[in-house]
Image 1 (tube, helix red, strand yellow):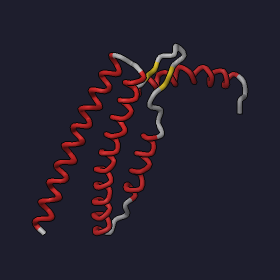
Image 2: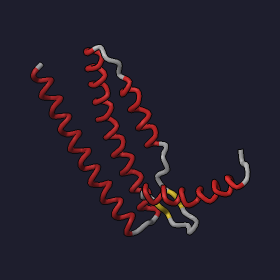
Image 3: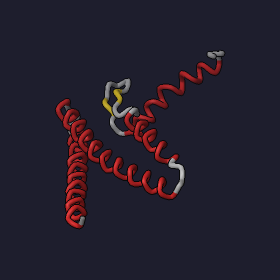
Length: 133
């Protein structure tokens, strides 16, 4: 039993180290893209982001499984467990890149939100003046 625990700790430590390396690579790719927004850098950034998210999802799945076991043992309902997949699903379905009217590629989430707001606000204001229901 002790050998299994030690082995699992080594694997977890390696996985966390891999996640940190992946995070550093992702930051470098983002910097490269910001300095030179070429198609090659976009591809590398997407690959780094996908790798990081896959590693992070694996760690999150372990936390969910452990928390579910704790709730089950304590006799509580695990409603938060069912909300976590919705949160991660929302992240996966959000807009990650946008090309604005000036044909400039935008990757920053705040900038994307501002662009979408600038685009849709006038449309809805026009809709308020006439009955668009």
